[in-house]
Length: 116
Image 1 (cartoon, rainbow, N blue to C red):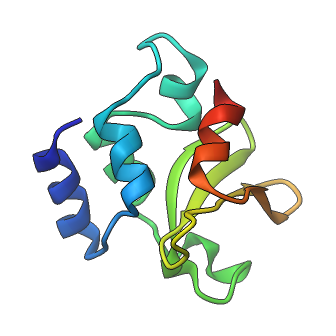
Image 2: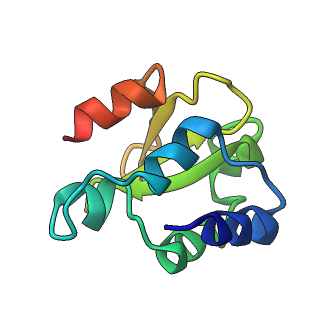
């Protein structure tokens, strides 16, 4: 991932990515064949754009869906989101089956530790 890729994402969705998420993508520490790269936090600009094309998806489940940005999944029924408005950059999961939206990590650094 490059600064140009991140600028493309920010421009496409008219957002500012949190510094923690930007840093994690720029200094990506997961192997290409890892679960983190495949699912939890892909490091591919095209994948990130594709999974965020319907940013209103959460509107039935949260009050302000545009404050959340889809960063990956568990490979199944749960999608992971970061909170764009919280400086700690907490990570949330949304379970497709139950409709449950819950905090997975109180900050992005803890999220990185969890998915290693």
